[in-house]
Image (cartoon, rainbow, N blue to C red; front, side):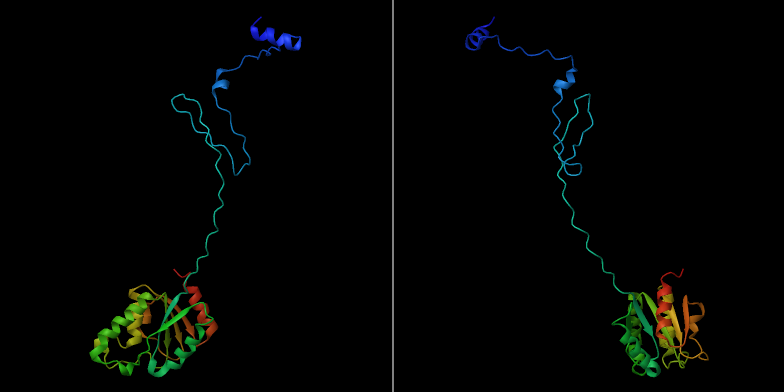
Length: 220
């Protein structure tokens, strides 16, 4: 009996309690660190790393769940529609189109120069402005009135019969789909419409024009 046992027996009148023998267990049970108790499935789940070179598995600290901020909504710009028309004879249709912008699914843009204001000295500049406007547009809307096929006095410098034909030509060059609105069924369409990709609307009707523009998105 050890000195500790003698002192314990003198104080308490009995031998000190002896530890109970434990059943055999794997050595790994003694070497493996205790696993922290998870607090929740999502927030504090344990991540067990793979064993490397026969070493003991490694347990990381519980990973704290951090909620992500909701994604911000993406506001898409309305499709831009370049309007090709005869300013001298059909400009009142342009004013009607302008009124649609406030509550429309489309944004309309125009070239406000009258054909009478365009002369040989600035044809090149006007062509550059028109081309850029068409390149920036999603679609091109053509208003084909009574004089849509009339030859312009500067046709040679323009390179087409008139400005409407030039704008349709540029739309085809930059692969912009068209909606052509023929104001009267007996009016001739501009020459450049012959192989253009788009839709024809007979008569100036807001619902039909909007429907045709919406259909261009799915047109192949």
